[in-house]
Image 1 (tube, rainbow, N blue to C red):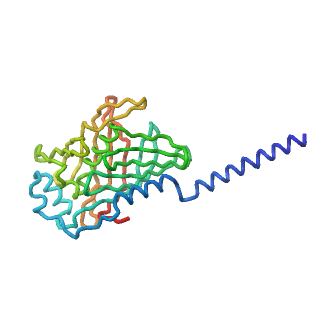
Image 2: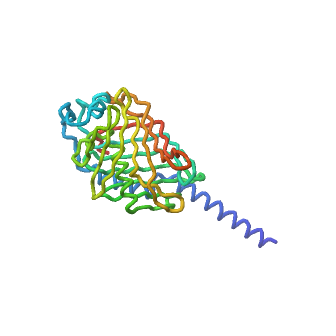
Image 3: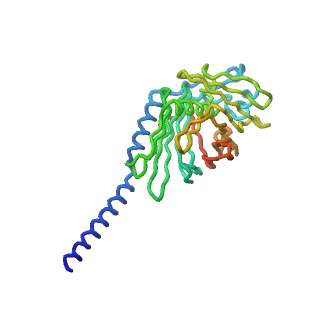
Length: 285
């Protein structure tokens, strides 16, 4: 009897020790994912300093009329040319494998070439979850890790490369520097719509940008983003990025709400719904 009670005490002690150890591990700020993201960020923004030049009316004069109005209405004219941007999504409803999460996301986009990286932070079943969505040197990848150690998924390949390039095109008007590059071609559709085509790394993707009466971007829609279902099947599904709730920040009108939507046959899936977005320009850290 005493031996059994002693064994029980040992088991309880070990369990308490494990619980405390896990709690301490979760409380430590360091994580492999954050370290990896920091390295990717440094690779993207290192040794890139603003030129001091400003965006002028002449710089956008050759663009379709809706784009010219957009740059003027949003206040980009007369502001420093954009080398990169940092986006903080502070409050996002996010769907991950049919699981609803509240996430925070920090993102960096280059203004020179199609490059973007994003770090996602949340909790899954009460356990810390982190993810990296990256596109650099033509390679797209998405990795998710729980408890700082367990890899839930690590996706890459041609479908990811193409979809990541679509993301760069969709976000290009928030990065005027990249919107004016030669690898993006713009075509007038009508008074409120413009078609953009981005060709890079041997891949070409297109989409339609729609603007409201103020000249603000409201929607980007494409058929070129590839959807991967829960069984791993890849297919073309119409995809939209929706902007709204524009507010002035340091003289520039910024969208405070951003959504990403899959237009699936069974109905629309809003898998990213951000309501508190902050954009910084020409960042060095």
